[in-house]
Structure formats: C-alpha cells, structure tokens
Image 1 (cartoon, rainbow, N blue to C red):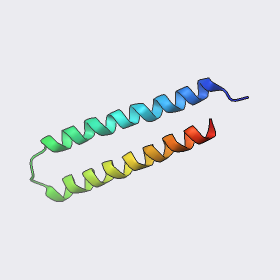
Image 2: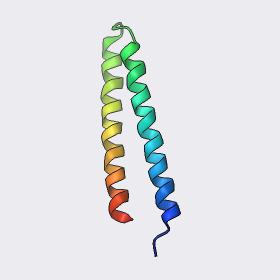
Image 3: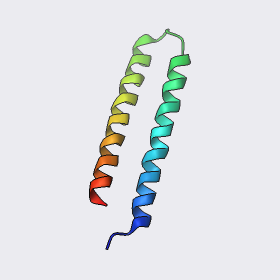
Image 4: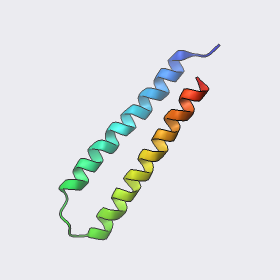
Length: 64
C-alpha cells in the first residue's frame, strides 16, 4: 500500500522548489547586465535545477 501522505509531501516540496526557481528567474531578470558572466551562470543553473525538478516530479508520479 502506498502512503499518499508521503507522495503529497514530496510533490509539495517539488512545487515549492519550482516556485522558488520562478522567483529566482524574475530576480535575475532585474539584475543589471554588469557581471554578465555571473548572471548567465546563475540563469544556466536555474534552468538545470528546473529540469531536475521536472524529472523528480515525473519519477514521483511513476512511483506513486
């Protein structure tokens, strides 16, 4: 038997992290273009993290 409470907790954590990623993207958009390489690196990391969160959500859906 699957504990749906655990599934809900995992999905909620993933959703919260995804919301943080969206907020981070908005903050990055507001930063000046100075330090362009750092901004680009942060944007790349944000994108990769978003991809990992999508994969985690898919795996969670398969498990439960």
